[in-house]
Length: 146
Length: 155
Figure 1: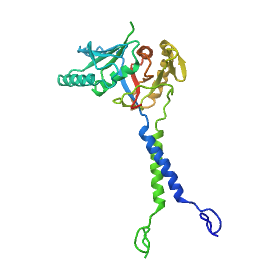
Figure 2: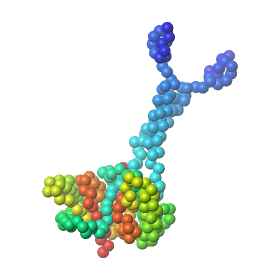
Figure 3: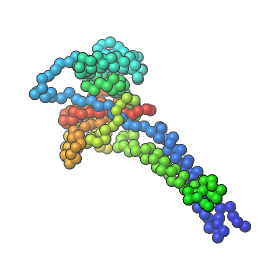
């Protein structure tokens, strides 16, 4: 009697259909995993260093963003958003307007973040993220150690 | 007459399984590669903060990674730099200087690449800002002024 998967001489033939099934399953697995993959990104800053003495120093208005130990964010001493808001929509839109105005006036925007020593680091990243969304790159980071 | 492209005698094209397997394998390899592209020399115990607007990581430069761990139970932080643990920011200055000297030597052999050495800080999202600031101070003392903070795009 001829068996289901064997050739006439008794050897098992290579079955392509189950292989396609398996490949399909593995492919679906990787497709699903590809959507969930975490990508590590970066937010850059430069430490304030020694200015080059050959160029004339320009003094610009400095914007200070303070972060309290409770996570409250304030821009030039005016509180923005709630301490639990990670998106910081008010701060973000204000920074975007600030950047737009500064660009029109051809002035750089200089921002200093002053964080309370016990404030969570994630809050600093929330603020840096809002600054990145507003395309502000001149950012320095400071911690109030008192 | 049988067609050259796999047609039957009736003229209808036959379903060809071999090219389909070829295509499936290529798609499979594509998804395998993009899933495993993130081979990171990272500290798995750190939960990175989320920043959807952060820029893509610049992998072309010489850099060193400072991991800032946070142990909530013991209420203390630890710096993991090149697989060694440090408990004070000031202890990082020497190792960062050594890493910078090595990075600068490597960068000198690769013309056309941005030669500036940088420090990437991978801080836990719950660590107090003070400890991140101490790592930045150590980088400044070691002569590195270019600092990046690592984040993830989603949880």
